[in-house]
Image (cartoon, rainbow, N blue to C red; front, side, top):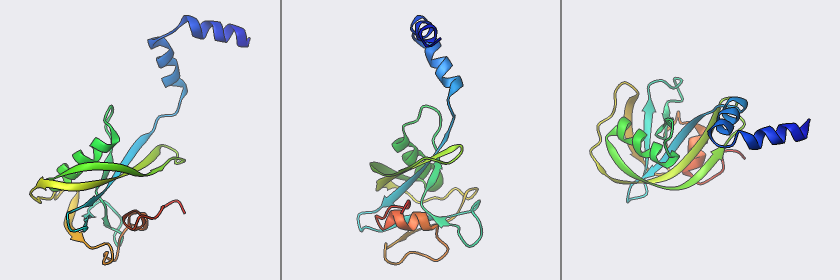
Length: 152
């Protein structure tokens, strides 16, 4: 039976193999977070409208769209939510194991733009020193800012 399956697999090379693989494997959404810093080392935090009361402060976050490089997701989300332009840096966190979601976080630096929040998603945007972070902040985001692994 294994030989027959292997022979069929070789016969359907190319796009048909990709279709079979796509149908057979899990599909995930990818949540991407940006740890955005300015030239003074402050970090950009947003008070998110849709997040639970008492835990609304966090980093710019959003979902990657189909075909989008995750580092570009940070650039797009920050621009959409705040009007600011950032340059993405290194990947600082990657976590799977959720049922339908993967999380990725990238460092990013402010390179321009004018702060203008998207009031549908964001209630407030402020720059904070890493040692003076606000109450009501997502703990995993606090750890990312401090350079600690949220998985520990």
